[in-house]
Length: 129
Image (cartoon, rainbow, N blue to C red; front, top):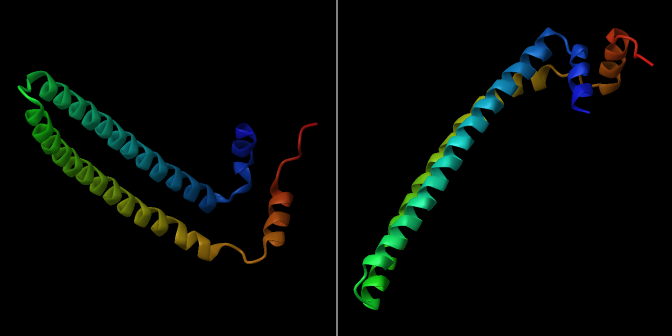
């Protein structure tokens, strides 16, 4: 199926192919930044786990554990919120970038999809049997 999609890209004119390439590049950058954010989230969780183990192993009493847990929970919540803010900022920037690329192309799209399909059919190479 994926190969068929790429084989059909010949049906797009130069502007359409350029738009697809630009959108693919933007999407690639988005996924790269999301991967970075996911790795940061995993590191944050590992750090919280290590801090919790350190707290439990060094606590002298149950009261120390309860107070330490409250402090760790507050610190972890603040760090998660900061991480969430960064992720939302990435989404905001990239959504503007995607819209700025796709909106002009949407306005150029023919209103009649049958005409577009017919034009593509005329320019498409014959299918191999």
